[in-house]
Image (cartoon, rainbow, N blue to C red):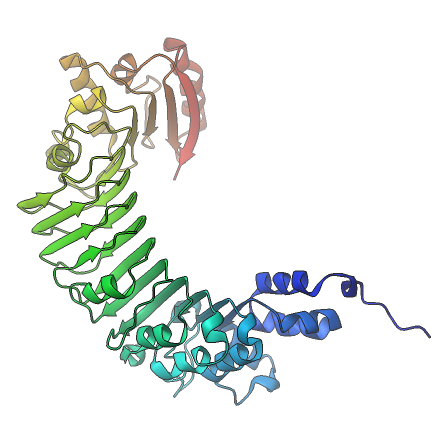
Amino acid sequence: MSDIVDPLDYIPAGILAHVLGRVGDTGDIAACRLASRALLAASYYCPRVRLSAVARARRLREGGAAHEGTTFRAAAGNVASLLGSQLRSLALDASEEQGFHGEEGEGDDLHLTSGESVAAWAATAAGPALREVDIVDFSRPLCWLKAEALPVISNFCPNLLKLRLRNAWLSVDGLKIMPNLTHLALEFILLDDEDLSTLNECFPCLLTLNLIGVGGLKNPKIHLSQLKTCRWKVSNVPQSLAIHAPNLVYLELKCVRPEILILDTPSVSTLKLTIDKLGPTVQVDGLVSLTDLRIESPNLNSLLKVFINDREIRTLDLEIPASENRYELYQAVDTELFSRTTEVKLSPRFSYELMRHIVFSMTSHDCRSCLKKLLVHMPPSIRTACPFVPLLNNCTPSCEVTVLFHADTKDDVCQAAVSVWPLGFPDIIWKWGTWQ
């Protein structure tokens, strides 16, 4: 009886290893190894691995006896040792949000940002080979102990390009310079670097920086000469915020009311700002390249004066916080904005009443517009007549108008609008959709 030929034997091991890297999860990779000799051989060259505490706990409950007695920390170290210099990407996830609550005494094992946990895999042959590391720590209070993930990673993973850490209290003591790191994301982190001076010094070549819910900051200052993209959601209320980044082109900033805001970012073309109120000291003269602006604030009037000024804004996206007093917002937007903006988006909470006030104010002021694109979110209850005719009267020829009806709007109302509104403005390009 002839041997059964495995069709995967004809596929190069490098391709199979790449496929296994797409699979990622260690349990699934182990199952693939059992299914084929070719996959077994290729698994030793797998470049990407993901370990999930949830998936591991489920396999143990289903009878995975081979895994009993092996801690999650040890499992990560075993995988790193097995793959060694072939490993390029490692993801470890012990997040409680995925439904895993752990067993008594497992907190230390799932404290993935501790120095011991990181060294378990970083001190192997995989450490220098790794290009991407993603760690989501266990979010129990037990694991909110000061962790040494950053200095250990900087010591053992000098060639790392991308790093994401979530749910941890991170120390920067002993952190070494990582000149190859270009992408850094810190999410829901307590960071022992009040002014971000250590971050600026040790990650000088960052191109992308995400600081989402990072606490422990006092008068933080981002000073990175090569930074291109930055998303910063400030979790506390520091007195001042500053960004000095000459090559930054995309900035999302969410904060409360800093007394001092300095944006020395002359290359920024896209700014998305969520803020309650500006303090007395604002320095945004560096926004000389700004063309796309989104502002969400109850204080639109003063913010628009600061951030638009004489700039040639191409796209303007306006939003207001929920539960704001409409009457106080009636004077929030200067109608002259439409005379120097080519694309406007009126977001869902930018209420119908406020929109109507703006467009009728335009009519009374006879304000000419240069709008080429307009996007409007309609409320659930509208009349057949188009409510923003004054704005359409001031659009440029062949303006593209996108109308998004609320999902609760009756079908006959939507159909009537689609049939009737374009008749009065045949030169306009109409597009239709829905929003929830």
